Length: 259
Image (tube, rainbow, N blue to C red; front, side, top):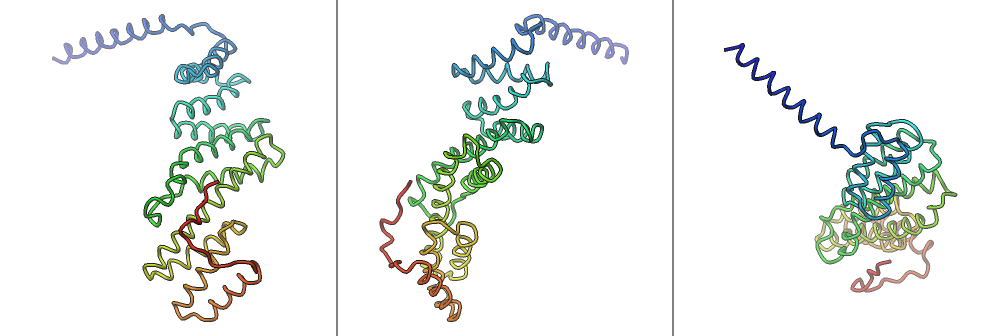
């Protein structure tokens, strides 16, 4: 019985090997140089054939893992994944490129691409920001995009992507601050004053130059008043009056103005 089983295993193994052999014979890239594989990948990337481009980049990586074509392919496959709507694979590829080539002349693009992926993923969240209960919304992708863009600006202030990145970071900073302020208002309406204060503190600590800072200070002052913390309320109001002397309490019905 054991001998029969062994024979079947041998036959099955030979069958698989034969299939693999046939598959290898059908591989059009067999014998191609790194330059040739990269050229085909790039051609498909430029023509919008992202799935095919990814396949060529993967062949390039597995067959020629070193050299300039492999390096370039490692960052371009991240873009291909992004365009093919596979954001997790795109982010993983960008992170891998940053880890393997931290001093590469185009590593700034990897940071930019990561920020763009997170930004694109959460743009729907920003567009729908005030159409539902925002105290329960997850803004993690927007925060991650802001962090990636901030990292690029800090590490590569002269990058070719820096001007656009600054605009996107500014938009995200103001949007995220407005999100926190809106959530603070939500908590104020429900009497959750400590939660409102914490939201406002987050704005002051993380988005100090955002356009919603005076709103955060105003809400914080009112929340402290409700909590009978008169000194903290007075301090918040004093900072508001000194820093934003022209601030006036406005109606909150039309204050949301997307970038």
